[in-house]
Amino acid sequence: MNVILSAATHRSGSTLVQRILNARPQTLIWGEHLGILRQFHAIQNKMQTFSRKGISSRQAYFQSGENPNQWMALMTPSPEYVEQATIQSVKTFLDHLYQQNKEGHDIIGFKEVRYGAKELTILKKCYPEAKLLLLVRNPLKAWESYPKSWGEYRSTLQFAKQWNNNVNDYLKLVNSDPLAIFVQYEKLIDKDEHTVDQITQLAQISKEQLEAVLAQKIRGSIRKKSITPKQAAIIMRICRRNMKQLGYL
Image (tube, rainbow, N blue to C red; front, side, top):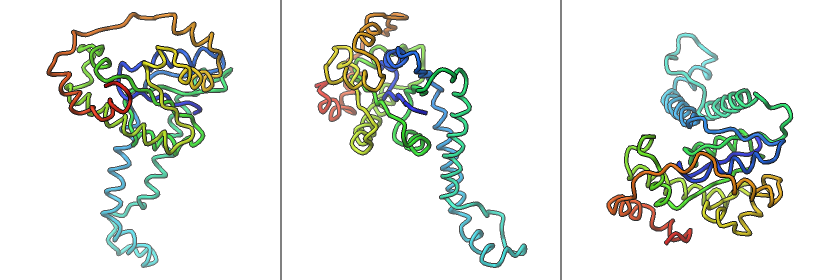
């Protein structure tokens, strides 16, 4: 896995950036996989919880020379082994999943709109050399353009919390991981020089190739009703600090 494109929420421009990356013929960035790493992370948490409960059984069994008369019902490998098993499982799954059509491509990746620090940490442990492209859009605009029919967010509050939590995670990641790139959708659309340079270098394409993708709109924008004052107030209350830091206020 060479490139992981992660957007803070839906409707943040991840498909546009995916198209830009795929403008290079030897690059194949796949679409979303419905946040499956959340399930891997949940499995790891369950196993590590059980592993900690069984620490006395594990220690007693092996310290006794594997005496079969020791209590062993809760005996489970250590939390460290559980983590390594999770990482290996994720890597094996993704490597096989994205093997399809790999021939002729030297850069492989995917995009997702559901991941924060927990999932991205697992991914970086699987692929320490992978480049992270962390994409953010003004939450007021992202929520305004999110169709109700999609139904993934239970409420405006849930959306705002996901945006804010993921932006917090992204800002920490970009400061700790030299392979992480933080991009604001609005700056890409406005062809901000620094943003364009970041993306063209990552994508290994020319500015002309990037502009050709920007100029071609596909499946016109799906918009919901105008954001209500109540919805805007919820988003502003939850996201104000990060919105101000990113220049959205």
